[in-house]
Image 1 (spheres, rainbow, N blue to C red):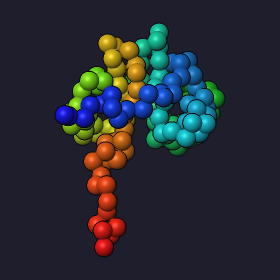
Image 2 (cartoon, helix red, strand yellow):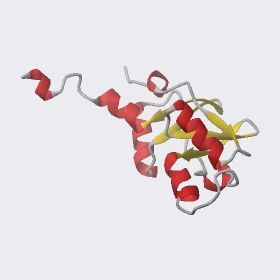
Image 3 (spheres, rainbow, N blue to C red):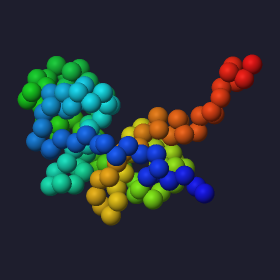
Image 4 (cartoon, helix red, strand yellow):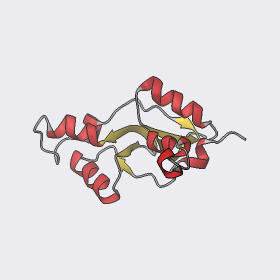
Amino acid sequence: MTARIEDLMSRKVVTVEAGSTAFDVAREMLDHDIGCVLVLKNRKVSGIATKSDVIREAVMKRLDPQKISVEDLMSKPVITIESGSSLSEASELMSRHNITKLPVLEKGELVGVITSTDLVRRTRPKKLAKDMI
């Protein structure tokens, strides 16, 4: 049986509304100890904002994080995957688009997120060679 996205994805997805600021995004990421938030507009995923986006588009440009909109720093369009897809499909999609976080949809609705770290944890050997000595 092939492992599916829905078996490994995180269902606890942190989102912000499109009108949020870079400060709001940073606060959510810090509060939840996560590396990205999904941006919603009219209840649909319209972008993804990562720590790197905040640093590159707000901090390094010395912009006021309370004035810059998440829409000005988020990555778009968002690459997504359906929940019934295989882990190898997710891995291939991440590799092709050079991304590490992939929102998961079910019938067009956001249901989770899977990251490259999730995939590595799944494929990592149970016992490392040094533990076998």
